[in-house]
Amino acid sequence: MMEKQVQFLIYGLCDPRTEELRYIGRSSTGLRRAKFHSFPSTLIRDGNPHKVNWIRLLQSQGLQPKIVMLEKCASSSDLPEAERRLIAQHKASGRLLNATEGGEGSSGHKQSPETIAKRVAKIRGRKQSFETRARISASCQGRSIPRSSATKAKTSASLTGRTLSAEHRKNLSIAMREAWSR
Image 1 (cartoon, rainbow, N blue to C red):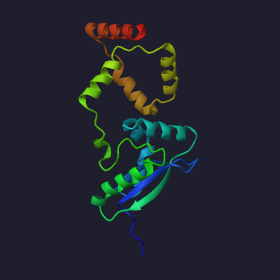
Image 2 (cartoon, rainbow, N blue to C red):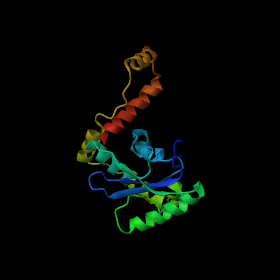
Image 3 (cartoon, rainbow, N blue to C red):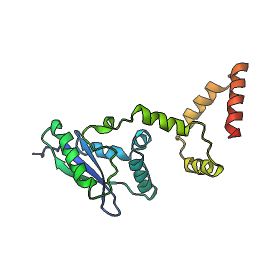
Image 4 (cartoon, rainbow, N blue to C red):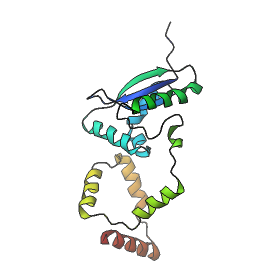
């Protein structure tokens, strides 16, 4: 008889080079949830830039975070408290990348309207140096979405013969001039 798989658990992501625990999470789907952290689609949407950068650094070295089960829980209602307890315990003694104290998921990490307004004011109108733009451009090289030749042919066929209105061309021209003047 097959043993029942643990469904409710607290997991950790460890650095495979040092075995250091870097992130603690909870799952109601066993270890499947922990594996999602390394998926490109998840990394794009993840709101925790420190964790994302760490995972991307590992991936650039051909590595993946090591997944460990830290604690089994009897039900999903036990998960939040267990996650909070383990994050507090390990945050004091290590370099955890968790953005919150746990228990609520990413929904618990909300910025106040004042903080959002300060961030927007700081960024708005800022011009990045040529060196910064060059670094960003270099980091984006090779990140294009792979498309099949059939998809490319369909896209080409749908755009062939398309004419843009004078107003649309004018707006594109203005936008490109602004982009190149930065």
